[in-house]
Length: 132
Image 1 (cartoon, helix red, strand yellow):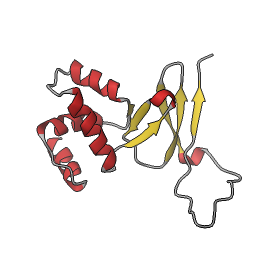
Image 2 (spheres, helix red, strand yellow):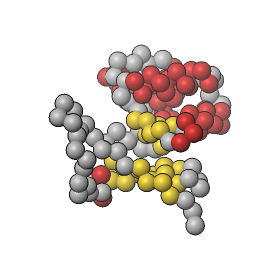
Image 3 (cartoon, helix red, strand yellow):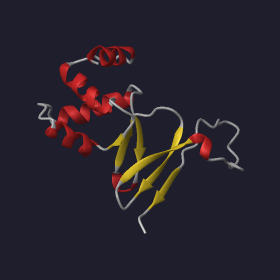
């Protein structure tokens, strides 16, 4: 497993320090959505000696290198997403959880006119729901 993450980090131009590998083992173990505080809780639960500053700096580095996708929500809430494939999201405001929606499950019948000097890169869809 360690070699897998070393290769992943190297491929993205990230130096594979011990702490980055420990974080990678938690972050990239599966497709998941998490906040920085969720990750801090997991680090503390696993009794790993990684400071909050290192966690935030590593998340920022991974984001800038394209290893993580970010989803910005209200009140400056930010989720990290390990699934880099094109997809959409459902955000449950009651449980503060984010779930994936496959991109094939949503169709656009009409998009707004985009200025001629711009090109559509990608459409993002976020459905906000709450428990009944």
